[in-house]
Each structure stands twice: as structure tokens, then as C-alpha cells.
Length: 145
Image (tube, rainbow, N blue to C red; front, side, top):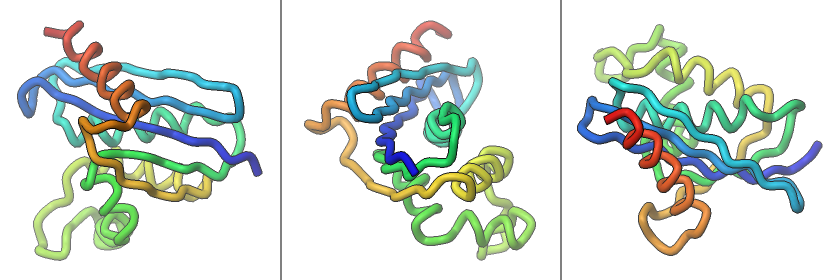
């Protein structure tokens, strides 16, 4: 199984508002940048979309080292919250509806295909690839203003 590195970030101008996402996939010397945006979305939807699009770009099951500055994404996966929401029909432990079930469903499917190791990184700090993902995401929402 190939080991790839995936950096992701999402951004939004207003919440909701125009949003963008960026992802960088790396395997050996190979590096691919991906990005996109939506006119009316939220920051969390863009964070999730970045991870989903990065994983969807892989052509075969891989071991993925995922780096994200989103505690929402990292914690929901690492602490099993998203699986719990799905098991309860997209209801959180406090009986409120879980947000973004469409994206969580897809992300959980992808996490069953790939072996994903999660890494939280501080946003807007000195991480070159996280900063580049932020530039890609911001560039996408700025196109939609």
C-alpha cells in the first residue's frame, strides 16, 4: 500500500458565505494541488470538502497521512464522533441533528477505503503546506465574491 501525505484547508468569507478549499497530495517527488469553492457554504463544509476531494483523487487504497488545522474534522474522526452520529441516524449525543451529514457520510466511506492517520496542525503558523492550502482556499472564495 502506497503512503501518501495529504494537507487540507477550508476557508469562508462570512459563515455562511462564499467558501473555498485547498488540498495538496504528495507521494515521493509527486505533488498535486487541488482546490475549489462554493458560493454559499460554511467553513466546516469547506474543511470537510478539502479532505474528501483529496481522498477521492487517489486511484487506489492508500495509507494516508492527513494534516488539517480543523479540530472539527480531526476530533470527529479521531474521537469517533462521526461514526457515532452515523450510527444514531445523524443525531449527536445531545439529541440535536449532526451538521453536514452528506459530507460526513462520504468522508467515512473514504476512511474505510484508505488507512487514514490524522494529524492536527496549527493554522496560520509556520507550516508551509498548510499555509499553501489556506492560500488555495482563500483564492477560491475570492473568485466568488
